[in-house]
Image 1 (cartoon, rainbow, N blue to C red):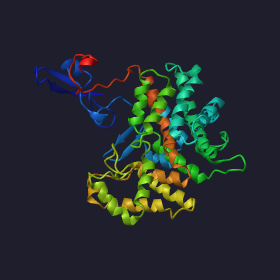
Image 2 (spheres, helix red, strand yellow):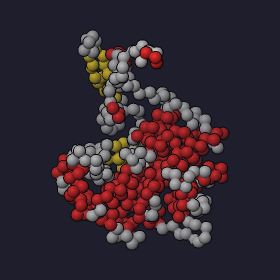
Image 3 (cartoon, rainbow, N blue to C red):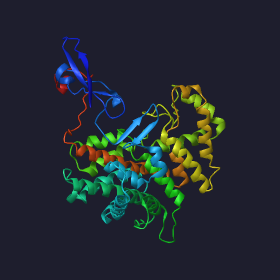
Image 4 (spheres, one colour):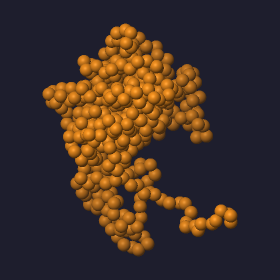
Amino acid sequence: MDNKPFELANPATGVKSLLPVRAGTIGPQVLDISGLPKDHGVFTFDPAFGATASCESKITYIDGDAGVLLYRGYPVDQLAAHSSFMEVAYLLIYGNLPSAKELDTYRGSITRHTMINESLLRFTNGFHHNAHPMAMVSAVVASMSAFYYDSMDIHDPRHREIFSHRIIAKLPTIAAAAHKHALGQPFIYPRNDLAYCANMLNMFFAVPCEPYEVDPVAAQALDLLFILHADHEQNASTSTVRLAGSTGTNPYAAISAGVSALWGPAHGGANEAVLDMLEEIGSAANIPKFLDMAKDKSSHFKLMGFGHRVYKNFDPRAKIIREMCHKVLAKLGQTDNPLFELALRLEEIALKDEYFVSRKLYPNVDFYSGIIYSALKIPRSMYTVMFAIARTVGWVAHWLEMISDPAMRIGRPRQLYTGPTQRDYVAVAKR
């Protein structure tokens, strides 16, 4: 939908042109600036793309000021309360909530695709025992293109659907293989009688020498975390998947690029950094000192898990995870968990401090998710891998949306060049 265009005048020539104003179904309007280089000989300057709409999408909507997150129009709190990760995955990829029959068929397809080729297991075993699991996951995902090359035609809708089922199904298996390799334990194969998250927990923690029973509360907590992490609009890793995918590369390579982007501590590694911070603070008595350090621009200390690039209000996902923290710790007999108690106290003190309140630095989703992973005994090095498993659904949804768009073009940002002007080569003997 187009609105009244925005008039722009070139100060050098006086030439005027109109920039089309486009409006989505909800959210801010955008200026179509694609004609600026041709009409005015200029680019826009927007470091880190904070004010740039890089694409048109129907998948996820965020209102950072109001603290709203919608998946295909559905509020995330409603989905967290009533849905499941498999249902949310279907919603994000296909655009609508499934019927009971559609959901059953989709679950069955995902379940039947959880096995990975034995050669991929041998590939995993080739890594050093203490290699970071994100390195292993990124490499194995990229290598999947060498095993499924017969169904990677990105222009074939059926091939795209097969890919989407395979990658969502196999990510937990790949993650579990990386975890078992780090422990030096034998790999546990997936089980078709277990639901998605229960199956993942079984592959993580079962051993051949004794039976293992998945705690339903643990599976429920993981399912909730996966729902909340499934998608988050055009974040760094999703934008990376779109940019890589715009080249026409195979979808496994595009997802592998997303895994690598997520690995950064400012993105997927933030919940791990929160636990490191809480351990550094140590006790509630030290909180005022560390809050003062966070306010001091000369200090290197950062208050991890507070504030968000998009949300200028309370992260709606943080409220949901906070409640799940209480439930999980109570069920697992960890109500006196010192990190959780410290986190609650830190939140209480920070939200009474004018410095943080005035800057709207509220707890985000990462502030509590790491505590749940810790309670579930998932190693800290695997936290970002958990994030990747959940976010793969969003990556796939965005890749599918982009690839099926007939107007898709290869991504090509421009720059403001500030280097030397043209220089003539000088022979090495004369320098």
